[in-house]
Length: 279
Image (cartoon, rainbow, N blue to C red; front, top):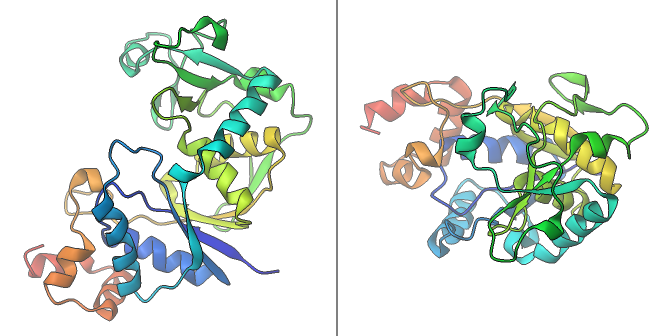
């Protein structure tokens, strides 16, 4: 069977060495390497970042299947899934803010902090005015009534894992200003593109628990997973755009070659070598 993998960056900043590791790792795991642009947040996407993604990946020597799917152009598919879930009675509107959740004394804790308490579970989508900002949450208890068997997933490092549907609580699947979420769109797109091996960082292992629920509800294919290690900066934080990490453009400007990047990632001395160049 052909193994299809995908690398799915967001055009909200320039790619860094963590992206390089992930893209190279992903390409090495499969027979077909698919590039997807996760640009559902159009408030942060910039044209120059789209172009830079293609430039950086080409510099790394990677080739991908074309055409490239841009999630911003796939909104009808996400809306169709939301309509299906609405008809199943597993979505509800929520106008609680992150501050409301963080200040809730009875909110349970999850991998990403406090989980939603279900305060708005009694509300219906028709209760919300058109000019009112709200999110659509997945009612996990209602969802499980549509799933007859226990769920599992297979990760190439962790092995077979039993799904804990409540691990992330009632997650947000869409917002009025952003009509889909990572959790929903990634499941839809992986199925549509025939991705049968999902590779991503260790920090997203927990996401499989809710993704398997979504896949089961919508009748989507179940891929295998391989959650790889993360690369960390001088402060012990994982490389991320929001941390203003050293970009591949910065590294190229200092004269590093693709082989240099591959070698420093493989040997794990990237911090030492980048520091030596003032990065």
